[in-house]
Length: 433
Image: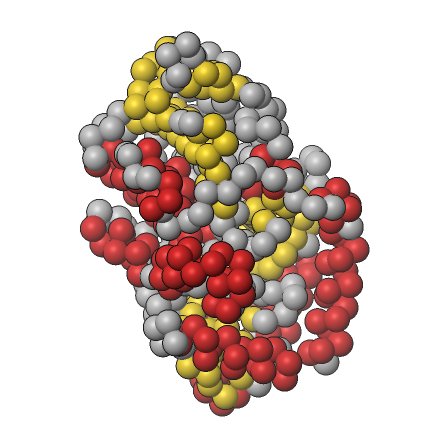
């Protein structure tokens, strides 16, 4: 099983403002371990920490380094609950047992992240001030009312607010209503990732950067060897935690997802005269459009604003102009500000909009597909993958173990992505005029 990698080098506000951290050297030897983890994002990092704390010998390999992919380039919002699917839909898809497990895990996912940060004393500007999701039209509000009613039956404690309260909490008059989810919050995601890595290293975990895994092969004694250009690791378990950057170390794995590229833009610190009434209580915000916006106000009064973009084959990001214009539409206070940073990373969308856990062969585990809930749900997935490698039965896990199955009509969906985005933006525009 092999794959190829195209290396990008991220440049983001998060990388600029995170604590300085030495890079990890490439693997240049043959090692033995209990578990090899491929991918040093949130999934792999949480798995590494859980495994190392349990006494396992762990080696983490990444084509870049810690938080090289979307984990270091995310919007950094920690929003509970799974997107797109209501509890009723989840029950139909998953059946009663996994519906109950995944509903509980997703509702508690934000709290789990903040508890992890507290337990390991990770400095990452963590704040759990609530998430405000604002509604762009009456249909969205109607759907939101139904969703809130369902999720609240399971303990979400969400509330619907009207136009005036939306304006007071957000600083925008562009929306008629919203939903407040008190468990939501934000972190500096690069700092969070580096903190997870440091905690894992303190417990004996080994990290190797610039170490793309070229293939994984089974040995005669039923172990697995992950080979890089300069070295290899042989272990009982291999965890593949590459999400939107997945190749085909497992055959057809890349075809189970559609990678998309959210883009963020950020300002330098702004004066109170400009940013004073924007998100004054520390809420994060997103909206209900097909092509959503999401934003946050930083402790130093920077503004971070995000939306959907795309990456060209040469690594160039496209979509920032639309995001800058949309930021001013939502927050006219930002009309004359200078946006000093632009960055983005690939996330993974699955066909059913659910995270997927695969065990294609004994000793090989895959976790991916967070559909825009990556900070919270990747943390849960990493823990669950570690539990499996530590001996938990697959039928006792939070996530069902599913086969690696190519997404239906994937080529057409990928090829039509640009047209679909244009059309959805047109519909959003007509609905918000």
